[in-house]
Image 1 (cartoon, rainbow, N blue to C red):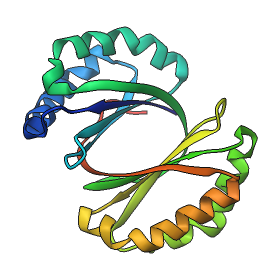
Image 2: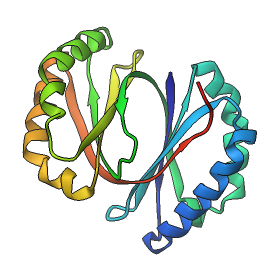
Image 3: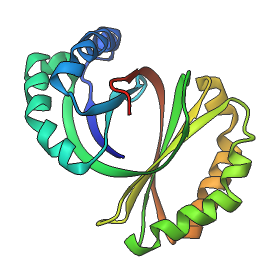
Image 4: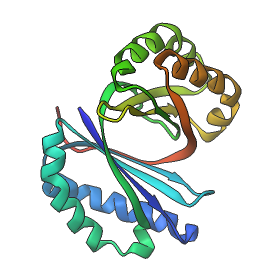
Length: 203
């Protein structure tokens, strides 16, 4: 499976709820407009006025074929509502676990040698993830990787934003261990509320 990750910056955080309602409404028509999409995840950071729209597909080719539909959908939502799109990236979903009912997320970004991705995942599964699963409020994760550039994102999901905050200290240590295992550099850590999750098709 692959993930299309679109990042947006909002100029007016007071209309974030309007944006969420708009995206929720549009997601109902996504089954027609994006017939190959499998699922959708919307993350919102009100404090820093940014959001992520993550759409999951079975293949990179399916994402390429869907781009015209994404452009049409974007044109139909005013920029003052949807925000300014600052990037669109495609990642392989290397691992995924749980996530149902999540209300908050921590997104950790990494960059390292492309040929170390699988080794890093194996070591993290052995040494890091068993401890991460014990964090209070843990709900699951998505491990996304771009094998051509060596960039990766680890989206860890929690039952609440309070659980995200309470796990910060241990999460910092686990993140450091995960990066070391893959020879990676930590390039960013962001915290979001999970505004919307939608299953668009049955696999």
